[in-house]
Image 1 (cartoon, helix red, strand yellow):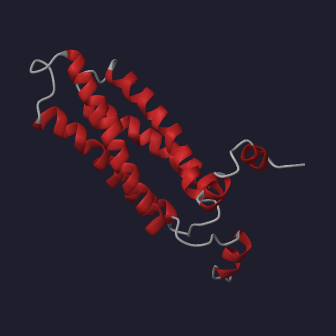
Image 2: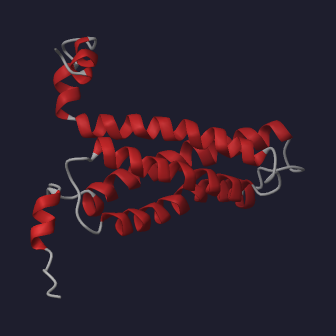
Length: 174
């Protein structure tokens, strides 16, 4: 009986299958990223139009933090499950903190340097500028940084089986 992955690949045009198989980690990363982008967008707008109406950068940051946490779980369990190392969570948090700042920079520039906010522009222009700068440009640049940094520093080697890790731990003598 074919696995769910094999059934899904059977639906893809034959010419595209080798590319998807060869770059499966990138494809999984992008699928996780797309789901987390949708989650972050919904959270961002929910916060921005309710409790954080006058703090768009805080709304984007909070939404991105939640999206990043979900991203870690999904990437750890699916995209990068075969690779990693013992200190991956602190490294992931460090990379993600930098990526969240990278994600916020275009929104900060749009709002406060270019002054694309009310009353200088219409409410619609402000919201379009916020979406394009924070959610589109910011997320794209942060995604490039995250993918590069995750492969470089976080999910770097073959994961050790739990039994191997336990054997390497020093035994305590009571």
